[in-house]
Image: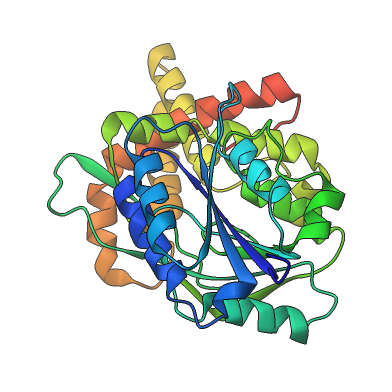
Length: 327
């Protein structure tokens, strides 16, 4: 165990089948088996996750560990922190229980740390695979990282362990977005390198309408992040300093149009036209992919409904955290 150089931390919850595939991809690494360990950090699953992992522990020659965490704190932050605290490697890699990593994944990360001596972390490409065509009444959720976009998402990121300890690990206040928030803190200590050949496939998630709406609630955590890092508001060039994207402008135009309609004002017609223009600006004419314009027009009900819900969550969070950031 004293030879362990890299520790791979995987949080999991009730995904024993996909977790097994993730582990098998990590077993198939080009990096020497005796130099890395895998820590499966179970967020108190109620399925057969424990049995699946312990069965693999008996069969494999790899350094596979199982950690079961019982905590009232919600979200994977405390699970990943448990893995970090029990790890042996000087480099900590993160992926998720619905990911398949490339065969040279660990080797590529280690080589980048050797190449970039001052780097605090390395992150790479994430490509979502699969579709939801055979699952009607669901909405696909993708996790794609194709460039150096500053997301630092945990399906595919490595950090020096000492850096993680220095910045205080993952913030357990953050039920969602804790990986991005951690990256913001680490960037203040040093660079996080983007390496395109550090490659991971992420399985698509087909969410029910209920799950999709529940997921929108994570907007509140974006506001919490900006309240913790107010300097990022200027750095990210928020529209008018408080609008994260164009959607809030579209939602405000809807509210204004409806208000003037109720008041019986002739300004309603003018504001209604403005609303149409802002919808086109926000959701249709967003790139040069002309073939998608018709479908985006037809998606008007879905986009509008989601925008209004997201706006309300962000407004609520802005009041709660005393930081005006509207989504």
